[in-house]
Amino acid sequence: MFQSSSFQKYALYALGEILLVMIGILLALQVNNWNEKQKDIRAEREYLNGILEDLNTDLDFINKLTPKYEKMGKAWMEFDSLCLVGATSEKLTYNALMKIINSPKTFFAKPGIYKSLISEGNIGIIRNRELRNQIQSIYEIDYLRLEKMGDRVDRASDMVIWELREFRINLQDKETNIPLLPYRAEVAEIPDITKAYVYILIDVKRNVEKCVESLKAEIKE
Image 1 (tube, rainbow, N blue to C red):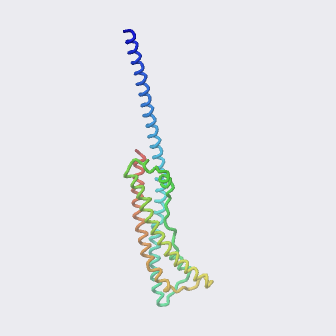
Image 2 (tube, rainbow, N blue to C red):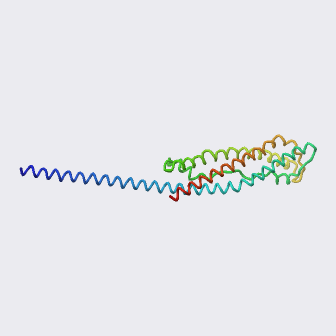
Image 3 (tube, one colour):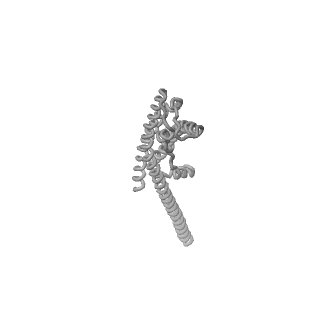
């Protein structure tokens, strides 16, 4: 009887020890999970702040480029008209021509934080799925559209500008009158390309602004 009672006490004591160990392990796991979650939240916040800063920089760039290319589109239309006038032997000096068509640089994004997010496989750290999709759409769709059209604008305008510069260099005279009719075919599509580029700039600007507002709201939470 005494031995049975001692065994029961020992068993209860052992069971209590096991329960305490299990509870300790569970608490440790919960604390570890909480710490990991907090770590992910801090990392997410850092990524979101970085992307917000990059997008604001991109937005400033777009805002500066848009009016320049609106003006440039009108300039190319004027140049196109001058090419047609060239058929009646009207000419324009090189310097005056360069003031009309010398294009500003096209848009290039600042994707550093986003590229880091993707390369490190951390895109899933952004918990808000809608926001995550917004960000990916900006970098993977909108900016690629801008880049593609910007390349077309650059190639078309650079080709004409280069040929005109070669014309001037060959004649070694900055004020040489240049017959424009030979450039008509090369210039004809540039006003439409520039107009399309402005349209995409405005459309992408709208999407970036929405994403910026979503980022600000998420960071405040």
